[in-house]
Length: 248
Image 1 (tube, rainbow, N blue to C red):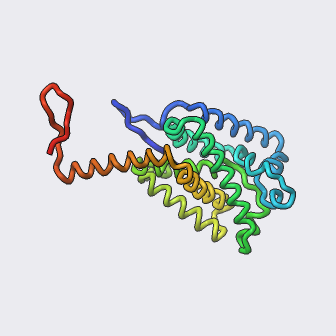
Image 2 (tube, rainbow, N blue to C red):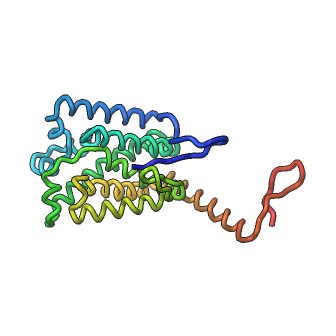
Image 3 (cartoon, rainbow, N blue to C red):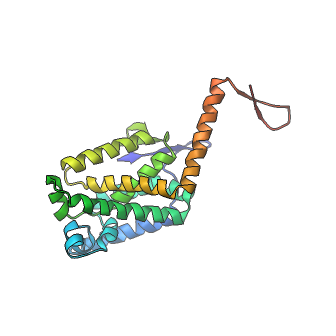
């Protein structure tokens, strides 16, 4: 899976800190959904995502409810771990309202992508059309996309071992999801849903623009200023006792 490590003023800590309101609520809902399907397995058919039922019977609640169900303890554990590690910083940055909206849009958008892909006239589409998809992975991949765009150079520890920049990590998982959804490989993992979360997340962030775009712009300007300071050998200076100033 993935891990992150963030420096504090005196030491390193694992993860981003305590739960924020939306992340806490989402964890509770996902755990409750998992326990409900353990006690009543038939709920998976009713609440999971089955494109055939959405198209033929108009079970239109499934693109929303599927993201609160999981296929096993480890499936739930890893999704909630990713939600904690990447969702907390995004909720603090965006605020709870926009964070929840983005999470739901990417989760439902990932489901819509899965349904649309299941209707294509290709061999892999038939398997998707009749399969049950459960899990928060579509929304989680949307969070990973947003995290990679917001903190592109933040290291992510892939499989707890290999540190790579967040932007590279997002490109890797996007390429894997695209290839697997087209070829039909991947051991039953809903790669089409993962890809949908990434694509819908990107489109939504570019469409809503304002806050997210301004954040990216400010980070880009800081990066440009740092490059220029290094290029022109700029050093901090100023009058004694006064505020620091940049001088050439």
